[in-house]
Length: 204
Image (cartoon, rainbow, N blue to C red; front, side, top):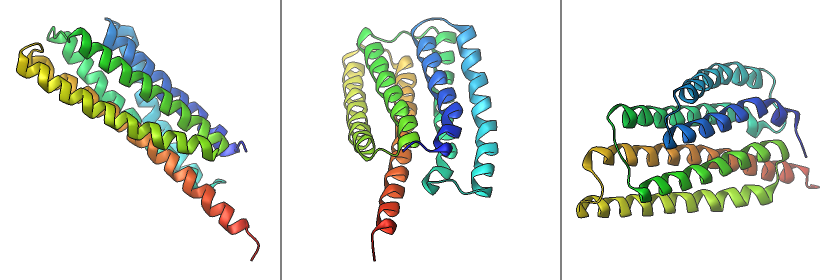
């Protein structure tokens, strides 16, 4: 069932999704204008979180699980801002990632974007199947990110990866992990809220 509260959250979700997409483009090529647009979206997300949370607390939404979703979206925005800082540092210091490192980061960008989009759809529909899918895929994301970090350490030891780029690579992985962590929190809140509603609807 589509909720009016889920619809009210859509603009904030879209800002996060667009911010993530622009940040990915900036990672892959010089795009100062895109970075500035992404930064502006981050500021908008911060502002919107305060306004929307206040509205949802004043008039509890249906389902109530959605009242704290703006806070999770703001935390996603914070994490993406962290990736943007890394991208600026990479460009300013002329860092170069290996081809494999670039592929790994792009794969995590793809997976993170898909999970944020799933969180958006879940907030609107409350679909328990989608919530379960998000639970599984978010755990898979964390496993993949850990595997990439281990492979990166091996490249570093072998001298394939330059130490000066190492901290930026690992920071990007951690920031994208944080984006997915909050997408999973949204899924958990919606799933728990749906379970409580079903329980209260059962005949006594």
